Amino acid sequence: MVDCPPLLLPAARVAAAVQYPCCTSRSSFNPGRSPFSVCFSRRRRSSVPVQSASAGTGNESSVADEPEAVEWAMQDFYALRKEVELAIERVSEVRQSAGLEQLMEEIASLEKKSADSSLWDDPSKAQGILVSLTEVKDRVKLLNDFKSQVEEAEIIVKLTEELDSIDTGLLEEASKIIKSLNKAIDNFEMTQLLSGPYDKEGAVINISAGAGGTDAQDWADMLLRMYVRWGEKQRYKTSS
Image 1 (tube, rainbow, N blue to C red):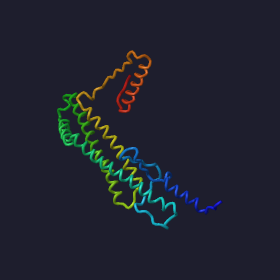
Image 2 (image 1 turned 60 degrees about the vertical axis):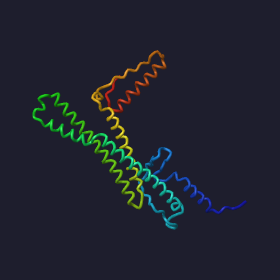
Image 3 (image 1 turned 45 degrees about the vertical axis):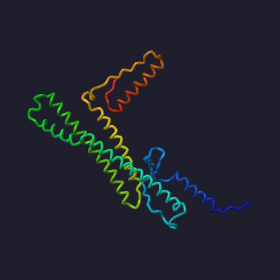
Image 4 (image 1 turned 60 degrees about the horizontal axis):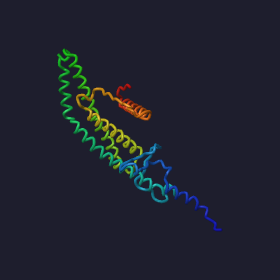
């Protein structure tokens, strides 16, 4: 029987901790989700230095683990930077396709009409002008908000490039901004598709089970609940 040195077991545990860093407080990168997917754990905000520590500045576990922590943080940063670049391009395209300049001209025209002293001689016409003015202003505000949000995320990326450490808290904040921005742009693009003269009117959906018996009736009920819940999520008035 061969006696094992007592220091061999702790060293083995240190090696295992380095190989499987599942209990760290840093952010994690998940390439399996999407080409530029960033996943952050909700833990204490911390900074990871870009340069690794030299030997002798700490215990064996922290020194061995720090280069890998830097690698993971850098992967998170590179993925986030790419997402921000794509978001910048998308915001620019949306603002251009929405006709921002034309919207500003439309606001000026509607404001001129609303300032006319004879506006309320025709209450119905006046109400229509004021409603249109409010809608156009809201659209312009939303487009400007897109630009402000993506600029905020871009500032975080540039600030991280200038620092000698990576603040995982800032990366998480920028990731949330980009995620919220992309969702808002998706909704805006949907409203752009529904911008016809009759798209603001209500819609009636008729679901018939036909002659399929009980199974068909159950399927029709499922479709009804699906449409009602979707309408409620979109803040539409629904009735069945």
